Amino acid sequence: MKAYQADIAKFTDAETQVFGISVDSVPALKRWSEDLAPETKGLSFPLLSDFKQRKVVKDYGIFNEAQGFGSRATFVIDKEGVIRHIEEGSTAIDPSAAYQACSMLKKK
Amino acid sequence: MLKKALCLGLLIALSVMALAQQTSQQARPPAAPKTHLKAGDAAPDFTLPATDGKTYSLSEFKGKKNVVLAFYVLAFTGG
Image (cartoon, rainbow over all chains, first blue to last red; front, side):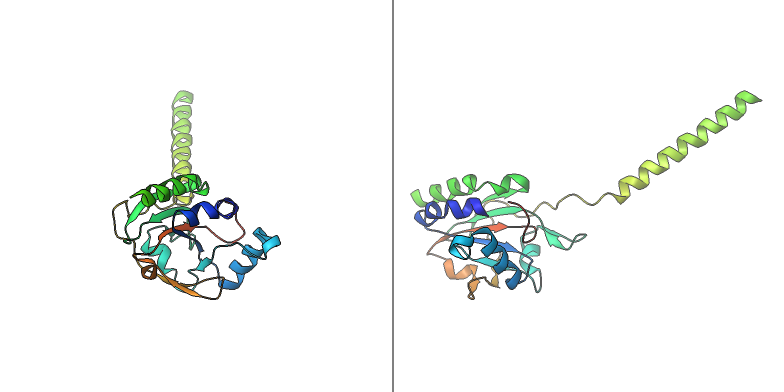
């Protein structure tokens, strides 16, 4: 999350909107965002809350039924709404692959 | 006679061990799910509330911006 915050200008430059997303409630995410970036009173990109229905984590196929929450993954979606890049597991923490995918899209 | 008893004992011990291993494997939590989606698929639309007080839909970015969705396990966890 902090890595995205550090690189947010790169993503903005690549005409990309970044969202963090989890199954937490909005107040919990707000507090987390403020904890991660206390100097700016929150991250400079919004965090989405899939708290009520856990529908989006299910739609994207990363919901863990046994545990009741999603797993770590990053999806890069182009302007036509098509998925261009997927990263799952611990490597998804590093935003550089996602950024690369976005800058490729910009060149098109 | 003693040999027979030893053999039987060994057999029982082995089967108990095998059973124990089987149950411990069942108790292990399932691996993290792998998404059914792949590059080139249409991204499922969503409408969700966000920390900035707004509600966002994927469809509102169509033709305007790329979108990066970074899914996190739970708030206050690493990454």
